Image (cartoon, rainbow, N blue to C red; front, side, top):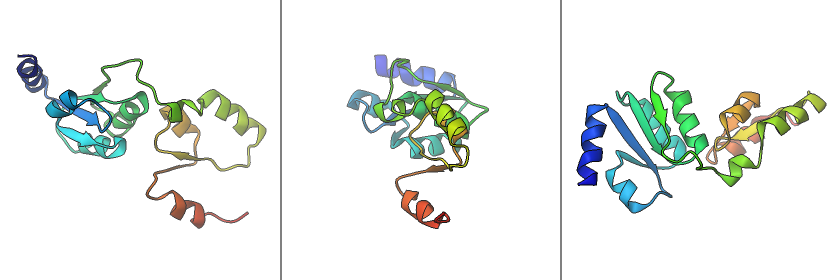
Length: 138
């Protein structure tokens, strides 16, 4: 019954459900897409959905919003965080950048939107080494 209600509401609202690999199977079963965070955001951007319900953590929903600014992005658990993303608070990065203004900042895609805005380059696990090796040595 609950599954049917969710699917009906999803259709009524022109919404899609994204589920990260780490979500419980019951959520994955009703999701339109299951995968890693960046791939999910790319899938969502390619749809005509008006609403993206992202069963994941904050940075994932933020990435979906960055790639789909015209869409409403919802996250069902406002307490859903990520220790990796939380390990680089934007306020601390901003202090570092003021102290060392000549540094280039490469940030991993799994960081907050605020950290992304302070970064020069955003990398993924698939391209980080190539990008780092392409940078001038000095």
